[in-house]
Image (cartoon, rainbow, N blue to C red; front, side):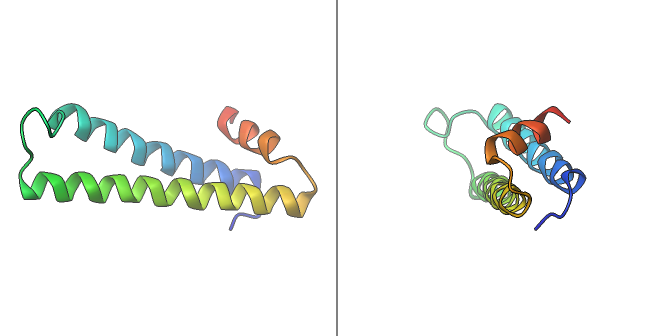
Length: 84
């Protein structure tokens, strides 16, 4: 978990970078229904997607815990982290 806003911002940046990776793969590979992906492409995409999902989950848990510990609103902390 994070003890400071700066740590939350770092987590947000890592999550955003992972999301960019997923979007780049989606753009490069195209929809799997149009042209089936190879096993390697599927594995690469699913690994990237899981990493992004896990980072986002961990970030949300950290924001929730930070807000609770500080007596602040979750949405306010999330917005502050996004705006940093």
